[in-house]
Amino acid sequence: MEFAELIKTAKVENVQLSCPGLPPIKGTLCITSHHLLLSSQPGGNGEPGTVELWLLIRNVDAVEKRVASSLGTITLKCKDLKVLQLEIPGMEECLNIASSTEALSSVDSVMMMYPFFYRPQSMKLKDGWQLYPLQHYYQQIASETGAWRLSCVNGDFTICSSYPPAVIVPAAVDDNVLKKAARFRQGGRFPVLSYYHKKNGTVMLRSSQPLIGPNRKRCQEDELLLSAVLDGGERGFVIDTRSAQAAKQARMMGGGTEPKSSYPRWKRLHRPLERGRPLQESFIKLVEACNDTSLSVDRWLSKLESSKWLAHVKGALSTACLAAQCMEREEACVLVHGAEGTDTTLLVTALAQVILDPDCRTLAGFQGLLEREWIEAGHPFHFRYAHSAYSHARLKQEAPIFLLFLDCVWQLGRQFPFSLQFSERLLLMLFEHTYASCYGTFLCNSEKERCLCEVKEKTHSLWSWLNQPSEWKKHLNPLYTYNALVIWPSVEPQSLQLWQGLFLRWIRSSQYLDEAWAEVQRLVTSHEDAPEESAGHTRCHSQPDAAYPLTITGTANEG
Image (tube, rainbow, N blue to C red; front, top):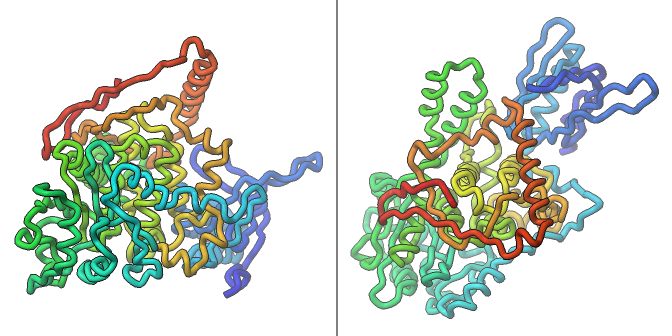
């Protein structure tokens, strides 16, 4: 396929661009294989026009057109929730631009996407791809204990197509056991180490559901693998992200969950979390409510509640807190899984690590966490983020699980403003690049697909750009102070807030808030430049207490 075949009209003069909060701009609209460009008309003194719009077409979620006589209007609803309006002279030109934009935004071939064509002069292709290897994380664990090993049993992706080539497993279990255990787990996702808690040596594992089936099949190798995780008389917890009823129904379809008779030292806890269509529809309803500025207070609160988005945030944080409590307070190992083990499972394991581990709350550590627990762990980014909240296309496999994770991290940052080294700006940037990016980091559904598409050889890494000193500084939290303690969030309804910085981002101006944060940054910087005042100054923040396994309802204050 040639991009030129999809572009019916490449250039239109006298197009007016309108977007909320900004005055209209008139100029020349150009459409290329990957971008919509609008340059304002040159000044009267021969000055060149200014590029006012540089929109990645992959970011377009929906195209709506309206034609009246000789003037057409195109509304572009973007995946980052921005809404743009183009007034185009000429009916034919309007229809052609709309048709071309729809066609180009719908190109589904990974290797035709912009990251494979993006070549900034300041970056090298292979930079950033090996910043956070699993081998480095394993070495940190190996320095603490010899109970775990790095296995390359999946080196050719034949054991599990959604796992990376290397995984961390119990040292006492050989690769033959892993191969047989993989056949007993959906998609081959046998239990692997997700997180080692240095404080007490407990671990968190993740997997997919066991294939128990209606005949209650058993697998000695799977039982041996989970038994090898526990020492002596230790007990562990299986946190299933489905309801007990859903797990029972899955067993009738060939899946299921670990029966007590076969796994006597593992106690099962069901904490149902929505995924798939219900979560996508929740996202759509929330965005609709946020965009309707005519709502009364009562109607707004009613629509916010009916979207159920904050209920999903509460559920995710509560389940992550449960996993963290099992490890921190019960000193027990945890296995997390749902059905496939690629969505809510990763949501829980990643969030629990942000709660437990101060290293995951640094900018570098958070990038490493995203690599391990989302990208390498096989979250299907290509399927889940093909469309955002505006698309008219029939939903297939879209579900904003990663957005829900980012929202939960934002809630943690709001409740503990000193404990995250990165700012809201990082979370917003990650949201944008998940749906449409010039970098290859979030392409494809698994490491196997990235290898087949040669993503790491032919595209740039987002981390390479982010870790440039100028960009790194922009995404730091000026209030950050290292906090070695666990951060237990409150998940009471009164404590959870709408993430206005994302959901209201294009609806109301953030000018004054941006100015306030710039002043905070200036004050912190000036304070750091006075060594006699700041030398040796550290904070230790107390944490609220709560008894396992109840939902944590502690304070949101840090100091």
